Length: 418
Image (cartoon, rainbow, N blue to C red; front, side, top):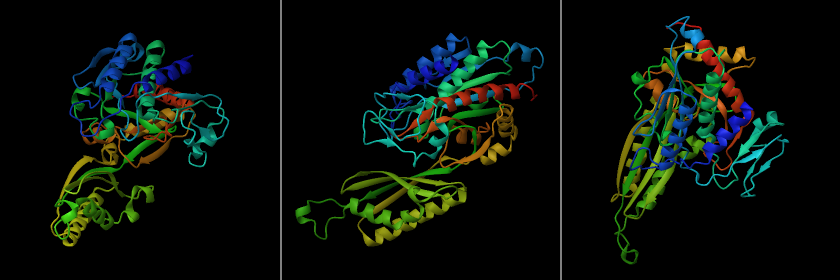
């Protein structure tokens, strides 16, 4: 029954469109995040959590006091926090999600019912081989599913609900924090880690099962603005400088083939142009810079400037402005300052008879920024797969494993002192 409730909870969440919006004019960037936050706050009140609040930024917070059997024994048990984000990626449509539940998965490719040209293939998803007989949830193929990060939300709230329902559950004080606009890099803009009051935090925003993400990319964003000279094309000879052509020449110069997202893996860094807009007069490029080592980001910035300088020599009437902003940093260093964050997550899995896997993320999470702000925050698996895509899917049994993991993790932390 609890697993059925977990599935119903997840399906309820994914049907709310919480797509974050680039270049937002408000926070959060979409009204659906406010709607989902309100729903979650009400659910947390129904299970009688304390300090439940949805603030003016739609961030949802709540507190579960230490279980009586722990509070009476030791008042110095550390407070831990669980975190997930409300929004979904703007890279794929999140409106009118129609989740499709495949029970007793038979091991075949999954043709999505709303668009038969979209197929979740075994060759692209080798983890499916180990999930035969399990329950797989997809979208109908016309939208993303939203398991990133509504699987995390469902896992956290289900785990907390079971702790409340079980008088024998062991846990110290737990704080919940559900953020907005994580997908556009603003998840922690309005988080006060001191006010959260936790020793460690865990984001539930990871793929598969039993993985502890202990490193993330460090990340910068480069915005390249190219100004050309516009004039009617009928009289353009030797007078027009086409900013679109300048942009094409610039992109060739940064040698994407050697360090693009499409051609790198594991610990290899990349430069990823993901948006281009504009016209002859002005064209803007947005480029993600990603590396596990921060000094590599400096090298990328130098490469981009050299490419711009060379491009202006080719197009002397063009102007190229480069703005680079910091986004987040590798969480590894911050986690080393509080080794219990990873140690106890491993211990909890081993108690459940499972094998923890320490992994790296070729991206970032709210945990990257929270760790940088002083709150050690590794990221845990919660059954997500292939995020940001209409081919996204989730496994119910892996979500259930994440629920069990959080319950055991809370028990492990209840046994130690600050």
